[in-house]
Length: 135
Figure (cartoon, one colour):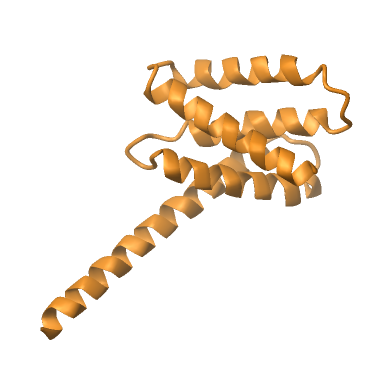
C-alpha cells in the first residue's frame, strides 16, 4: 500500500510541477512550493500513518518535475518519477532524515532516464548505420 501510494504521489507531483512550469510559465520554485503546500494541507487530514512520508515523497518528486523541457519531456518525467518513487521507498529509509536525500534521489532518477535515453539513441544510430553499410 505504501509503495503504490508513494509511486502515485510521485507521478502526480512530478507531472503537475512539469505542467505548471512549462505550460503555465510558473517559476520552478513557485510551482514546487505551491503544489507541495497544497498537497501537504490536503493530505494532513487523512487518517493514515504514513502521511509524513507521502508529503516528503510529493515534495521530492516536484524536483523531478523541475527538469528542463529540452532534457526530458513529460514521458521521461513520468519514468523518472516512478524511479524516484522506488528510490524513495527503498533507499531513503536507510538514510537518517530526509535532508539531501530527496534531491539526490530526484537527480539519480532523472540521470538514469536521461542516460538510458542517450544510450538507446546511440544504439539505434549504430544499428541503423551498420544496416545501411551492409546493403
